Structure formats: C-alpha cells, structure tokens
Image 1 (tube, rainbow over the protein chains, first blue to last red):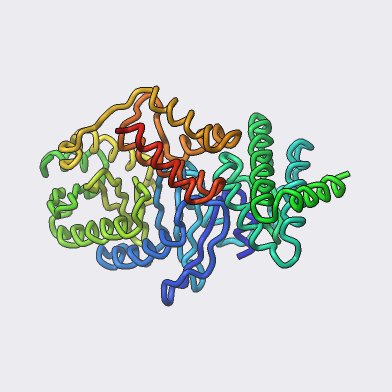
Image 2: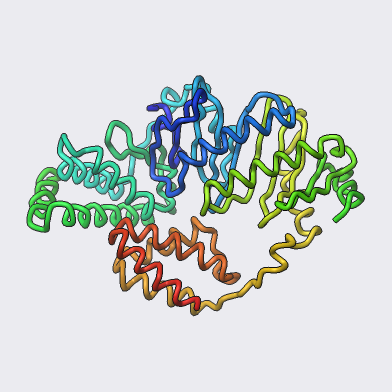
Length: 213
Length: 195
C-alpha cells in the first residue's frame, strides 16, 4: 500500500483482510511479528467490542518495548502500523484516512553526509540484486535497517524499491544516523560476501564506487 | 484491593475501573457489577491472544469503539483497566495516569509476588557486551544500544527477567548477521552468564 510507504513515522505495517483474517502484506523494518499481532488482535478486538457494546471498532493500540502498534479498519482491511511508543495513534489514523499525506509531504534537503549513504545503499541493492533478485535484497535491507537502524526507522521507508527519507532528520541526530547507515552498508556488504563470495562481491562494490563518482 | 478502593479511583475520574487476574478473579467497581461476566470474557480473550503471540511483552492495550473504549495495562498475569465513554473533555493521558496510580496502590500481581526478582549488577551487561563483540565485531555496539532501547532495558534496574528478554532479542538480531546457528550459539553463551 504505497500510501503507507510515504508516511513519516511508520516503522512497519501489516494489512489483514477483514473478511477472512488472512495476511495480505507486511512491509517495513519492524523487528516484531506485526503480521501475527494485527491478525490476532483485530479478531480479538471484534469479539471484545461486541461483548462490551463499545460500538464498531474504531482503533486498537498496543504498546510493547519502545514501539506502539495501531490497528484500525480501512476499506476491506485492517491496517496495523508500527510507530514509536510516544506517538499519538489518532494522528496516524487521520493521515491514512484523509489520504492527503502525499500532497502535504514537505520538501526538504538531506545533509550530504546522509544522502551519499542513502545513495550508496540503493546502489548496493541495485548491484547485488540486479533486476531478478531485487526483492531478496530489499528484504536484506529491511533486516539490516531493523537491527541496526535504531532511531532512523521512523524517518525512512522503502518506496519503489528504493530507500528514501520521508522526513527531515533532526540536526542533533545526523551523526547517529550516518553511523547507522554506515552499519547498514557494512551489513549489506557482509551479506554480499556470504551470498556471492568475496571476489564477486568486491566487483559489485567497485561498480557502486564507480557509479557514485 | 477491594471495591471500595476502586470506588475512590472512580471518584477521582477513572471510569468503571477493574482488576482481573488470569485465574478469572475479578474486582470491579459498583458501576461495573452488571458487566462483570463480559469483563472476565474480555480478559480471557486478551490472555489467550497474548499467549498465542508468544514472546512479545505487551504492556498496554487500548480498544476503542465508536461509542466507548477500554484502556488496559497488562501487568504480569493481571489486567488493570477502565471503561470510558467518549466525551469532548476526555483525556486518555489522565486515564493512564490514574491507572498508574491504581497499579502502584494495588501492589504487585499475585504471581509476581511468588517470583524471585533477581537484580543483576552492571557487570552482567559488561559481560554481555564483551561476548557480543566477540561474535559481531563492529556491529556489536549498535546492536547492543538498539536493543537496550527497543527492549526498554533500565541499566540501573536490571533484573534476570529483563536479561532473558534482552538476550533473546540480541540473539535474534545477531542471527541476521552471523546466521541462525551462530545466533543460537551466541544466545546460549549469553544465557550461561545468568547461571
């Protein structure tokens, strides 16, 4: 669901069909089993709202660790979005429901230190994955971001198979974000060596360096 | 905690407060007496759902309908919560604050009383970090710091239960870098620190 890919603050999301509770899509860099959480809790919330006469399900919010999962019905699905724990659920629900977010998306310029790392990451995924294996490498990228990204996660997303910043990084976090992206680059290179051997991986990394010149 | 104590919280602004143990024991304010069974059923559904998901530690649940809503804090094997109706001046933050007070005043959950809470020293964290470095090299520090934040580990209030959760998360994250078998080896090695 492209709309969700563009909303700043969303770490990951899952879509569940209301009709049969099956998982339609899971995306993002979340480390939590958000597909299971949305599927189980959306069904539980239907039973509970009926039982206690709360009315139709408006939304459900769960907190765990540093994160919050907000689940709400939208058209024929339940959408579950993982955000930071201290963010307000209704703010995000409104953004999705109004579908105004893309038009309202502010323009900003990324600091060079960050944009060059983002470019490097996208080129690595492109070189390692090529056309045929892109999804596999996007999956690696999400894994790397999930375990190494830390505070970056609410600011980034994968849009049309490319890592993008959805929101301007705060000035006091730029160094930390650069470190995080550097770790993700190291992670991808390590995966490249494991997947295709060191000499082949080195050729791909060299190709990225050439493309960045 | 009894019905009178819950009534006090109700007077402070916590609507229809309740405490439900996993065993099914329920204490509810007078206004909730008529829906006692429904509340118990809700608790059963919540505990079953949490158990079905497994290893994730959910600590609050908000279920909001068009007419009314419920806020629940999950505390070991008990739920503390309230049922509210939507009004213009409703503040969920205020309800959470009152639930926090209710939790403090009602003491620890019965099962937690039976558990031995073993507080660990800072040395344990240092040992964890050293072993992590051995397996993950330059990735270690970032993985460690990210999981400290994600798992909400308080380094000055670090209990064995937190350590187990932390180690499990570290092992899972490490497995994505060094592979699942090495990740399991790391997890087992970290668990040995606790023995």
